[in-house]
Length: 282
Image (cartoon, rainbow, N blue to C red; front, top):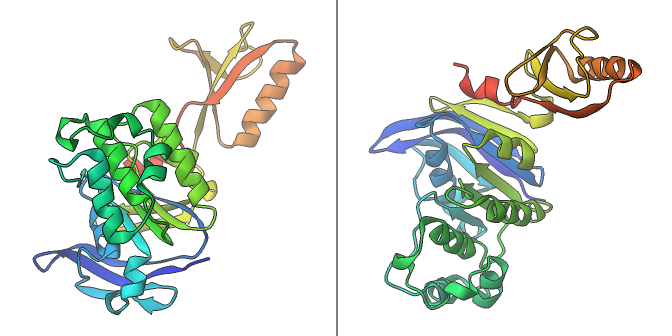
């Protein structure tokens, strides 16, 4: 188990801070979802932890060691940029071999893991954006690290491959620290255990996702008969009867009433993401 600690970190570009006073301690092996509006400082956070940007002030520690003075600590971190930073004129295989020669790792294994065998001899410049993303992810997974910084790892990927990537990352997170940014809030709640919310360059929240409860839940119910006389729900164009409750427990009580009335419920789901309220609020 590893511990990543940020103490009062200011960081930015040309001496102008984007991040201000960021402090948190990640010591649980899991996925920490990094969320925030565009321009909030998520990518700056990743670049600072990775050592691409030097903090203006504050300290970043990995297992108690200052990363600025620890080469070993920096080598324990791997960063996936949301840009595809792969040599465009090299073939997929040669590009991955290039990084393998520098950093170590098994090119064949990682190509198989990400289904890249069929692209082995193609130039990176000839690939689609989704294919380039797969090569970038392969580069990150060449060598096992202690901390992974993944900036929008499933952007431009089809749903099937996105799920495969999430499954790989979930398996990794059993004994690693993974910081994972995404604009897909449903993906965030699906994959993440912890939340790092950045707003206007400041840490707005650091908590377990399971602790985040919205003020109101909208629950959609599809049933064999009209349920509006049993519970306070209105049918919308989506085909759902929409029930507004203050807690999941209240939704469970409503479901029990519907079932006791002899009505078959064919579907029941939360219509909003619990993170939406946080993400959109100021």
